[in-house]
Picture 1 (cartoon, rainbow, N blue to C red):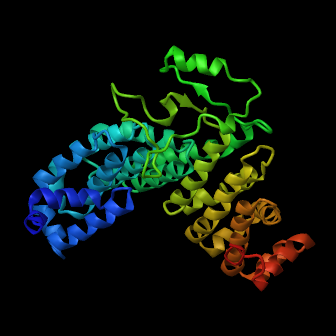
Picture 2 (cartoon, one colour):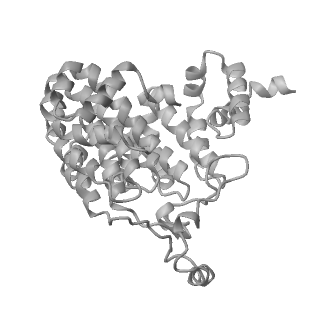
Length: 392
């Protein structure tokens, strides 16, 4: 009985979806069933059944289970990027409309997956994406400052991918980048944001907030609720007429912080550096100024992002061009390498090690020769002491 089911269309379809399910046991079993059912002919099988597979995945993207919605978004992106374009082209707009709805989901993993999946489809079918591209672009730029760091990164990747094939998105990205980098200057000193009730909530929740002590630390209240059996938030569907547009419109929300705009801008710089290295090179001074701001509690998060991304930017610019513009980055880099925060320190040490090999140790030493403390850190990195790998 089981052997007969393995080769059925329903079993192949369901195992295709569950290869991306968040629960490891379900995922591994589905991958095993998929290999048994199709072997090395997965592309051929899905191509033959595409008229059944795509509507099924679109339907699953509207499932009540957020983990199923997330898996469906990944499957849609995979099919639209690996199958014959002529098979997908008539279905592309419908897939994008489904992903657009998922991009407004209340669960951030669903939004993050839809964010990148939509960019993948647009990069393959830019003409078919035209009716929804403006709305998608607005969402990508909105999510560049999302409360969740990985969502900010995915939004930057998506913008970079679409900018490769869509000139208006490219122009908008370069136009907005300087302003996004500078937003951290508006971050209040020592500011910790408070959760506030959404306008969509009822009186019960509002009454709950009114009873809270004003001095209560909001960092330990109203955190994300997680589902049993997974690490994904237990949240409802989004989209028009449903439950709003995600974490910004849940029952409880936290206002976006200025430093989060700058954090997303750093990821965006890395993506745009591959498109126009000259334009990004001219912004390295602004990057150095942004990462130097350290009077707010989350400054180490922005610093860790910057020092993790600088090597990618440097490689895109090339050695010669990066050397001409790297000076403003060196003081905050070596100050971060002396930080007591381990996350920031590890990222900075790794970046120092990279720069020593990329521009040359002697050149780097010459740029910091006037700072004995910086030289001591550089020599420790050269000796392999306190590297992130040895300290983990």
